[in-house]
Image (cartoon, rainbow, N blue to C red; front, side, top):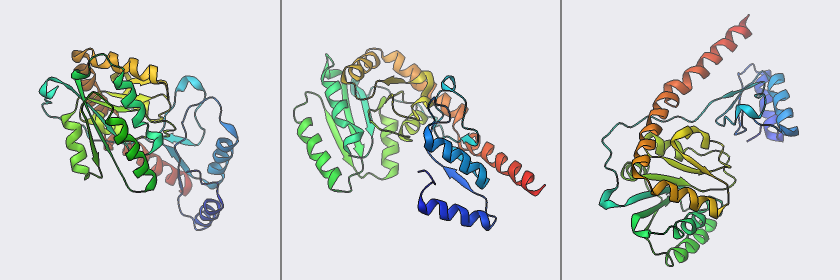
Length: 275
């Protein structure tokens, strides 16, 4: 969230007066073409306040210069090394983890899967939090939709963290078809368990997967169905991309790799401030 709100301005100014170090956290891409007024104001405000501005969203370097006072500070995960049992019971196990909210687009995933020619090739598990009226209405709609599907769908709600991690271990492909997704960590968690991932083009952390995953045009049923068909039609490629996903996590997203640069930046800023 932007700190340029009434509460944010008062709080940051107070801590600035007290000499406390400030960190602004937003989910603004480090690289993008159109900064807009909010980005420019926040950039100037961070400089005036002497704040470190961090974001887990990298964006694409070809789209323009990075934010002057911001640093890329991605989500982190530990790679899990184990002998993966691929394609249990002969089918591709597809997993989606996301709150049961309309913008997560469970409906889009189910409709896209319904377009695949052979439903006997896969099974689907939908995992998410169910905690309010909106979630309950979304769940009712999903249940009604599932009743019309000709493939297996398992719905799990409010699972303990450990149970969700075990589902990553037992599945073969992760899909997050959400729209208006500023940043998600579930795709990185899936990668850490050796799953290739499919995310929508609007997901600002979707680039974490690099060549190990796929992206589809946000909200496009046709594009998601096409990408799913490509993914499930080549099991050797799924395994190759899954192994690459885990390698990417080990190479770029472990806690030590993520936190060390921020710690070094903090020490450098402290030395500069002291001098």
